[in-house]
Length: 102
Image 1 (cartoon, rainbow, N blue to C red):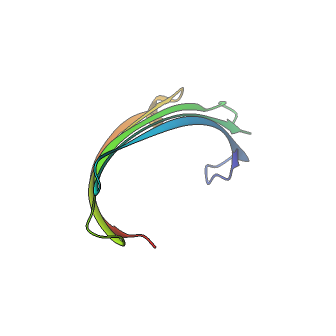
Image 2 (tube, helix red, strand yellow):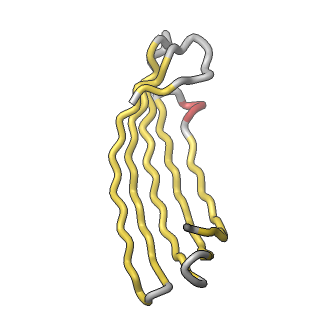
């Protein structure tokens, strides 16, 4: 895909990505989820030709309270490797979520 960017001197970002997810139902109302996504971004128009490789891993549990409401926990690990050192980073996040589905 082609994405817009707010980075100066860059006209757009060309993004190529692939991912896969797995859900497993332990009980009728307890579902485990795991996802992995790999992404490559190339910044078009940047004189330094910035390229980022990103990997995202996530795992979580959802508990369905009833047909509409659910709660859950999720852990996400994000690794961004850029050819420009100041743009490389690692991010760990833990989330507690409450939601509704219709």
